[in-house]
Image (tube, rainbow, N blue to C red; front, side):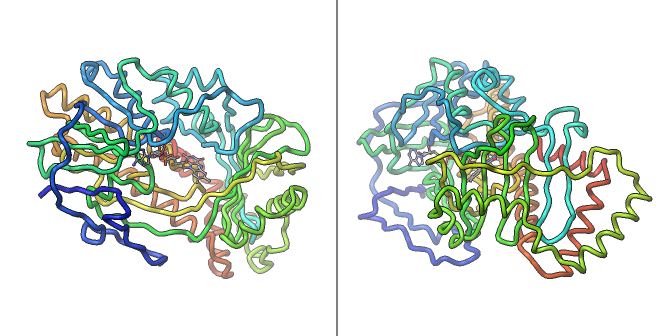
Amino acid sequence: MRHLLRKSAAVFPRPKLPFISLRLLSSSSVKRQETESFAAPDDHYDVVVSGGGMVGFAAACVLGRSKRLSDRRILLLEGGPKKPWSLPKEYTNRVCALSGHTQRLFEKHGIWEHIMRMRAQPVRRMQVWESCSEAMITFDEQYQDDVVAHIVENDVILQAIKNQMPDHVEVQFNSKVDGYDLPQDSSSRVTISLANGKTLSTDLLIGADGAKSLVRQTMGSQYLGWEYDQMGIVATLQLSEPSDNTVAWQRFLPTGPIALLPLTDDRSSLVWSTTKDNAKTLLELPEEEFTDALNRAIWDNSRTDQTVQAVHEKWMNMLDVLIPSQGVDVRQLPPSVSAVIPGSRGAFPLGLGHAVHYVAPRVALIGDAAHRVHPLAGQGVNLGFGDVTSLSETLEKAVLLGADIGDVRELHKYESERQKHNVATMASIDGLYRLYSCNATPVVLLRSLGLSAVNVLSPLKRYIMKHAES
Ligand SMILES: Cc1cc2nc3c(=O)[nH]c(=O)nc-3n(C[C@H](O)[C@H](O)[C@H](O)COP(=O)(O)OP(=O)(O)OC[C@H]3O[C@@H](n4cnc5c(N)ncnc54)[C@H](O)[C@@H]3O)c2cc1C
């Protein structure tokens, strides 16, 4: 039996899923059909990466640059058009906090140099606090002898990867995939049908086609996911006073976290997760009123729970005696915002999703096609770049052993390595989200005491930072 899904609404209408908090999409819940074979392929590639977002481009680039895979024909397919690009004067509103692991991957492949030549802002410290108590935690470069992260615009990341793309890797824009014919075992190849009528075949299909991945649906991999009923509002912000702006600020509000990520001395990037209704209201506000609402979200202390506050104060005094502060974990005051850069506001739906299987014969999923997380920990694309590292190393080892790169036994090594890391990260992010969505006094009290204790325990903070940057 071959797994086959053609994306033609007229023939296979996608089932409308009810908006429930948890959904489990299994091979049986996604409509599949056995039909006549695809047309004979017009061309064959050893590897086809489907989806040219940041993760798909990184995969094509890293595989193309691998000495062990240098004789392989690699193709990247992107449904969208090729857009001419030059670095704009004003910062764009989509940014990512790149971790230490991503930096090392990019350094190895010469991508990092391009990013630094364009623009990136180091984060030397991160301060996380909440609106219901005075509890907070800080992460400082001092704990890992390196910066906490770098804030880089998505367009800059993509351009830096494109600059390092080897000539022999083919990139086809305007090449939307319409359907895949996936083999049941490694004895036959993957067939890919494009909306422009072309048909291709490949020994290995890498699905990097984002959260709504057609590759994943065709695989029939179970997908565990839910929507947070939240939007992430993004914008570029003008700060009231220029300063050495290298701190990332995140405050948990009962409606979701708000983060200011540093860009320059007087610019920061906003990621404000809030309910869909609130997001709609905020997006419609005139710029001045939006700026006022944002400053209130960062500064307003009217939600402080007085009972929690009293107990927390005693707890802090006790911690001070038991574990004297080393000076780096003290509270700093966040910046205030003077304006939102006109036209920079945007909003994106937020959800969580995880494919139970990342691989099948001759197929591997990477990036948001395999997993999607809430942006509160700035991990989404970093997990995707981690997939790229792991998959490229797995394929290189397979080639060294003389194995077929589409052999599912080899691909399973990639799956188990990544799932160990990704599932743990996703569970922590979702746990944090839930912990801070609650206003009940006992919960606020417990999390406040816990957070303040972790804040003074340097080894534990080092451990948390190590996991986040790997
Ligand atoms: C508000 C917000 C803030 C975030 N902040 C951070 C952060 O600070 N740090 C971080 O690590 N992550 C962050 N993320 C997450 C990050 O943006 C995503 O994880 C990342 O963009 C996923 O990249 P991707 O390449 O896997 O998928 P995508 O960016 O979704 O790319 C998929 C590509 O596949 C193409 N495609 C889809 N279907 C087809 C098809 N049938 N044929 C051909 N092409 C196709 C699409 O055109 C697209 O280009 C944030 C997300 C949001 C919403």
